[in-house]
Image 1 (cartoon, helix red, strand yellow):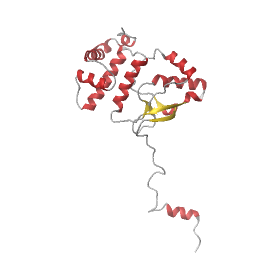
Image 2: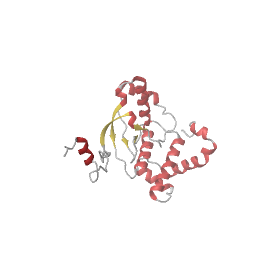
Image 3: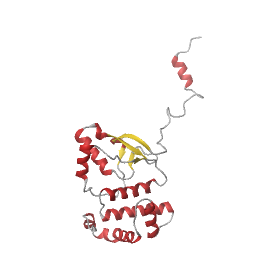
Length: 213
């Protein structure tokens, strides 16, 4: 009887009941706790619901600082379940855009790779991301009144979905404050009226800055 070849042995191992029914390696899951993580620009996407819709008025100054000093405060990142890319978790879309520009302009590796704090996605991930971006934008560069109003309306929709019922303005104010974006009920009332009545009538004026003190 002829001695079996390596090809024969491999064929027998891959035949039932030895056939592989699982992937060669398990999918690596994201960390379950806050974890420093080195990532490259092509692994990160901006947060799609970012309240800021107009250019950051401090854009050029921030870019000049990052060009000279590097990125002093890398943004924190997270990832929705099942998605391939990380997203900015609570403020940092401007810095991400600047890093992409500087990487394209200079080709310097210090602009392409950054050490970020990864924070796990939770059941409240979308709400925490939106309120985090709201609070961060208020600290780093003032939002226009209409940007703030539209973001609060987006938050209201997320809170309504989380609660399973519509929230009144006082409840919405309390939820936003608990999640790190303090706002009172009269302000929410004015913001709601702005989105419902003024935005359809005078969008250009609002996006040009109407509502600033």
